[in-house]
Image (cartoon, rainbow, N blue to C red; front, side, top):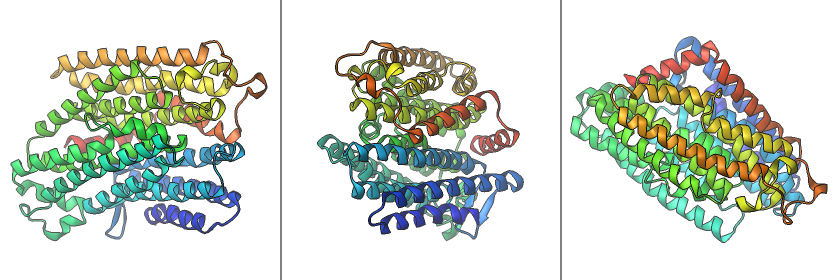
Length: 487
């Protein structure tokens, strides 16, 4: 039943928000009720999977350990983003940037976006998963163009076109997996288990071709290079809570699709094929943003390129396999929390400074003390500094590749150092540099309101605790998910 609640709740919230005609408060209350219900349902599903190994609702919805890892990131980031959105939009309404109709549009699309991601994770059908991920493209395209500026419209169209083409390639790859060649019959269209069971009779060459299309197609949505070009524009132009959901939740959902097809491919052919491909794309996806980060002038684009880099690290972990797979799954969770903290901090800075250009953002620690601390700690966490969890997951991933891929590991260590140096240069400039005449007046020093502060503070606290202590059930679920991927 929790699986059904997880899909129905955001749908009902979207319909209720659509019916609201005058009061923004009704939209806010709807979001602040729906998000905790969705998170509670996700935790109930996780508990059932931990006890029983899986959770099912009829023959259409199901979740196992792998789905739970992604489901947790979507539900957690969605919960934080819902409350942050209320405070963030209140400030934009107060500053007369948007009005009631835009706030209603935002929350309707916000709930549909969450519903699509939840459904993509728990559906048993690869076709329905593709439809749900395509639905995330349609809902978020309007959120990216939310402010109707020329640059926002351009980013939205770029996002829509590139992702639609990518997902079309992913759909073609999906159809190749569903072609006759296994004995699982028509059930393959609605059941991942049947697809895996029938993969043993699939032509290995066809499986390799199909996986290439899937990796490139869904990899476009993940932000793997060189298909990443839409991501910096989209993540930087969307409202900050949506940027957090795009980086912290949606990228993981698209990665889940790749992993599910990787499992099928590894049954049909040697595991080295999918792993080598993922190592290649992982290295390229780390390399490109590592050099671009150094020259960035926009802090939201900086965080977006960081997301690309981390998707490369995660992909590399799955390519190395073994302990690297465990590290990659845990890295997905840590990255979701850390990147959400950074994008929420970016939202607070944008509300205060009115610009995303780093040269116009100075003295954050004095102008926005809490946000400045959040940004600094978030920077240390996202760049893998100890004692934060990302340091540990990167050690897991890189140690898994030392034996067979030592040159790759050495290159990646250099690239991660480059990212740290570039990030440090920008963050220090924004946090510590002296204020200029264009900075906010001393009377405006302070944070916007409690709802724009508490979500990132609580997320950061959870991130810090998780870096030191990982509960047994969480570790067990991640280990089970890793064993499914490793085969």
